[in-house]
Image (cartoon, rainbow, N blue to C red; front, side, top):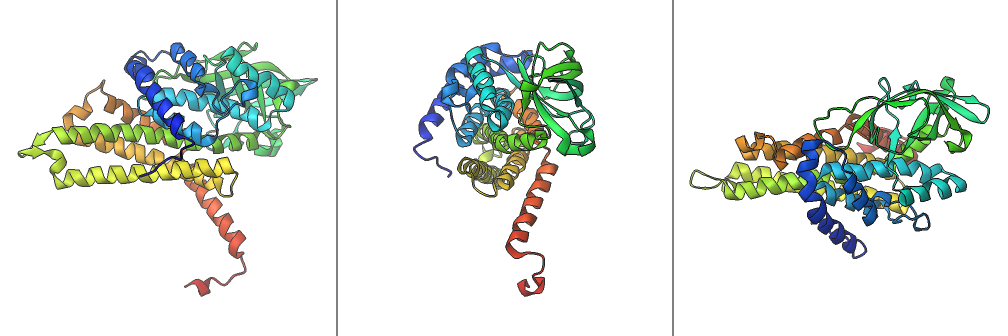
Length: 394
């Protein structure tokens, strides 16, 4: 079984206890009302989880990616939506930490914990999802400012976030090399929001489209240099994908727990169904997939924390593997519960709906497989080159 080092045990116990005592009693209500839980925001800021990656001298918790994953996994066991809130907050903060200059970090990073600001990340567009380079939103230079025009879709925290990291093309002719990143405040003139998306899962955490009509943004709100946007976005997602994997892992663990407990209590043919061979095979596969996903998630986090090579590969691997595991385990758990698994309003039904989006956001699992394959080919080219005779390996 996967074990954490002593360094992370106190955090694990702290998050687990908080999730059980504070979040779990609210999870069903948040799901049913689909209202953004501001009370949870205040509590998660108090605990340091919404500023988990921000340095201490800016008022943050200064935790690493492994800690980020622990928080996401443990909270996802009781509420995937609240885990999403923490993940998206960090996704909206990471561009600042990655490419913000000293002045931007002092001003903006310190504001997040001090003023309890909610962050959002605006990358996806109606015609630009996995293919980021095809985005159409533009940022036209106008003196010391930029005019932003375009539309972003599926913006998590859209409408409730106080500040948005927005990606737009400053040089459309350069494709993805012409993308830049900006910080935009919610009250900016010309910025508007669509109605909230009615999602099948992750209820309580809104997403919507955000429209930009001649929104003026100061040059001081440009992150990095013009054309750095694609790099900033990819480096951000590289660091957050293990947390999505951890979120999916928490969802899967919750579903397996429900399935095992049900199988131990449900009797058919004169004995608990957990004693039936076919059922035991399903439970064994669940446990094995969860342990495999957990090892991969935390291997990716470890590579990122240590700045090791191949972090991109492991980040993509753990995201697609853990989320596929979550979808399979939640579906199999519903099968184990039979008719009871198909009833609305239960925890298991919620896990299945929540699991699906983990296969899609932060880069679809098809794209993650492409990333892994490209990284693998790159590694082998560096090791063997193109001139080596392949027949010697047969």
